Structures are given as C-alpha cells and as structure tokens.
Image (cartoon, rainbow, N blue to C red):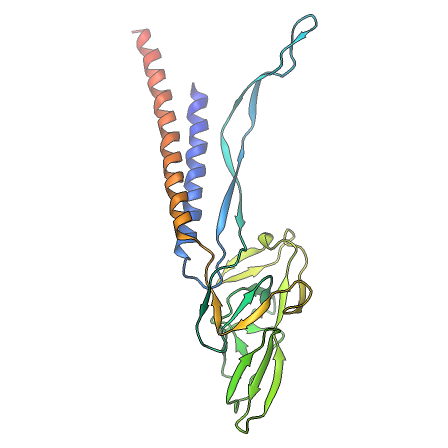
Length: 261
C-alpha cells in the first residue's frame, strides 16, 4: 500500500513541473521570437513480481507477467520551433525570418549567440544591434548620412544617401542547426549551441535550406493561448487525481488498522 503513496507523489511532482512550463509559455505569449516548450514524461522502473513466460507447470508458461510501476518522471522539455504569427510593424529595421534560421549576435566576451528576435536598431556607431545592444555578426555599419535603410529578402542591407544613390553596406547572414531543439536557452531571446544541437551552419537567406527575411515584420511568439489553458486544466486535474490516489491509499490503511481495534 505504501507504494501507492510514493508513486502518486511522483505524478504530483511531474504535474507541478508541467504547470511551471505552461506558466512560462503563457508569460511569454507576447515575446518576440519566443518558442514554446512542451514537456516529455517517462515511466519509472517496474517491480517484476513475475516475469512473462514463467513456467507454472511442465511445458506450460504464463502468457503474461506481473509487474507494478513506480511512477513517472520528467524526461525533458522540448522547444517547439514552429513559426509564430508575423506582425506588420512598418519599421524597416524590423525583420522576421520566414522559415529556418537564426540571426547571429556577438556577446561582449566575443562568443556568438543566436536569436529569432529581429527587432534591430542602430547604436551610436551606426552598427546594427539587437534591443539588448548585442551587435550582429558579421558586423554591419550604416553611414551617418543615410537617408533611408531597407533590408532585402536575402539579408542585403541597402541604404540611400541624401543624393538618392543606393548602395549595399552589408548582408545579414543566417545560421541553422540540425537539431534546434537542442539549443540552450539563455534568456534575452538568445540561444547557445550545445552538443545536442549539432554544429552551426551559416549561409545566405533564401539559399541552402535557409528561410528568407521580411523587412517591416516581426515574428511573434508561437504560443497558442487556448492550447496552453487546456493543458493547464489537464495538468491541474491530473494533479488532483494523483492526490486522490494518496487519499484512497490512506483510507485503505485506516480501514486495515481499524480491523485490529
């Protein structure tokens, strides 16, 4: 009977983690480029009381065995990189990636990180940076006398000077990974590569499996609020059912104890 207590406790802890993941998804429903996470569960070890195929008499074997599970555990959180909705901002330096790929940014320590947040700006030196001030790499500088800036679908950054002459001052390269779900989320809409993500592959937007860039749009979160609320209700009910299993086990132990009174 005590096994039911510990088994149900693992279920309650697993559902608590699920609620935490759902809460983070809902908290970032309006975060640019955010990708929702979903949780994966695995069952725990089983107590083998009788193995399948056990010989019960000469030449007679049982078709099934007898085993009792010990609960569940959280195996992983899987980040889902499906596309979010695209919002028209009308701002030329806002870019969305329509398809596979990440923007590359350089951290203060020189390391390269990756993001789907295309809300770009220019810093005091005219360099293209993210909202947090991290510089795009390869670096792109916009002349101080540029009258207008626009970004092509291939990542080319075009500027027009006061005389109306257009020129390309740089090209935004994209990066992709064999397993983007293996990237490590760092916050600030940034990801770091890991052994699970595979090596980075860089290239030009629209070529070799990379998505294209769309100026004037931002990719919103891919969180579907209705689905998350349904998952939240399901997790809450599962938590409640596991607590009822503990209560049922307690009542059975109490009834057993009353027999001896």
